[in-house]
Length: 297
Image (cartoon, rainbow, N blue to C red):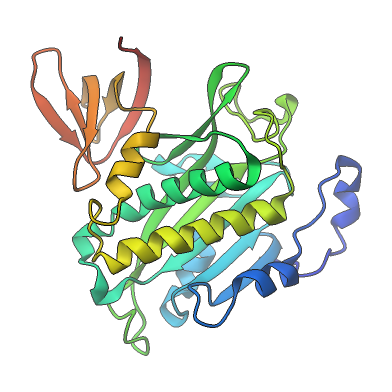
């Protein structure tokens, strides 16, 4: 992990691409305030994975730690897929939540969906771009009328440290990767997208990161105050409203090699995707890879 709180010696390498480094000090001044959720914010030039690094340090860190990398060499998505992008072309960061006894642990799974709602809300405010959610953890934008993945979320449980009373039950590290300025030539796969390709009004990463973290703080605060209740906090309704998967004909590729095809009808109180099969049966899917097949009219 290479520190990069200043512009760093490698900044010149990307100056021709108009991708300036993040202003770590400015971000800390704006976000790490007394009484707020965020307790620390560190920016590093490059690392393997912000999730891996933050998870390793989670036992001794208080809730609200934020780790941002200008570049990840071993970024991970769901199902151990890689997430690689040019330096300073996106936002790659992880945050540490320790809900403690305020939220029953069986509701902690909602943090993945909460991060999706918060990111979409923050991007709408700061970049003026509509971001849809693909269950459970993808962020979609429209590029020339085509639905493309521009971001993803990965949540991992971590153990708590013995000196952290609130964190003794462990916590959750939530990693968010977002393509911001990638061009068509830089996309890892043709189905990927970026905020720039979606014609976002803002692609400056500093205000985008501030907006997403402030949105995360707001949604997390409401969810935690409601004891993690997704209905009482408004999270379940908001997620459903922004979820592009609902109403679609989908194929769910489930653990163990089983597949399930049908219409995605709802997200239940446990955050599972409820699929209605051709036979009219309903099955709730808690884990798996969902493919959008076609719209159902």
